Length: 524
Image (cartoon, rainbow, N blue to C red; front, top):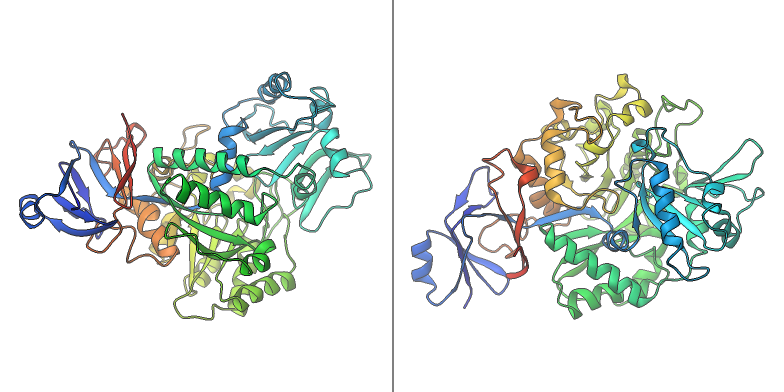
């Protein structure tokens, strides 16, 4: 027999405030909902799960993340909470004392906007820590890294090395690299690193999914397939953890354009919990390193308006390749000019099938004209509400206060009828959906506590929809995921508080996560 869930507030999300008293599930699906005693009589012998007064919602799904990258963050040095460059350096010094000769030192998440002096470290400061260990530290946006001289030598980078396409090697006044690499230039260093092992990938993915469950996530749309040397090994990690270890998680894998041809030649059936989606490509970089592509120069650096990862012809060619394989595209677009170029390319190369829709990821810097264009297209926007807390106020220095009206404009997009899904971009931002929901609702800066663009705040219901119905729609599962109703999957997130009734999102805890009718996490 199946399971009868009751004893708490159960929100269906079919419409706002809609609740049911009980839910009966069987073989991974919701078979019935309604009155508790009626369901007891209809399904005698069912296992009973009393929610103990807690609140049950459809399971949260992150619409844009890097699930293996999140596991790596849990394994590497983590700078994301550090408030000075000296803290970063001290953590590197300590790590250098504990590792074997010549081993790489890798750190994640430095953010100079959190430092009082906003200092970007120089490779010579990393050289002072070690000239034996290659050192690689990743900026929080993952669109820039800083490396020491040893890492540069292994990567073959010198003052004569030209900037690669879609990348920038930052240089001093003498033309010598400072160790700071943007976007495509990072790949020169990544390629110099030893190929990661199957065991490493398995460990990172296992840690990540266990943490996702703890944060209330039943699944995620993730982009990992191009970053770890061997496509076969990455697919093997997903198979071994989700199917072999039974860490049940609905993984929707985007396919980076670099490995699309190879991917198409492989057997792709890895069971019901691992599916494959759109071709992923990048139109620009990130705001933190001023590589997001803007229509006007940066307010705080008029010498640049960002980086275009592909030419117009290159972008069109990639989308045409996707269409040739019958694929949708998912395009990273942060700046308004990158967004415009992506719309141009999609309009010139529309999806071949009526039910298909493309995805534009981030959509942070927009204007009224772009919003009018996108709402007429079969496009869904993958937004990361947490950015509205972590990017303000410094983003106003980048963009200019007079151009900020349509930036991080979540409420405007929803009101205009643009389909949106919610994610974290982990490991860039914390993976917890409740933090994303909080940022969407409050829009309070983590730096100064101020509320920025309060008119763009969402209701709690709208924010929760992003991580449930929005994520489901993004991958064509809107009739299976994201609601508590007959025929939908038995995926639930159970919370300690009723977030629709209590203004206590930061105090709310995940007490249980259920995937496919199975409890995968329970707070003891």
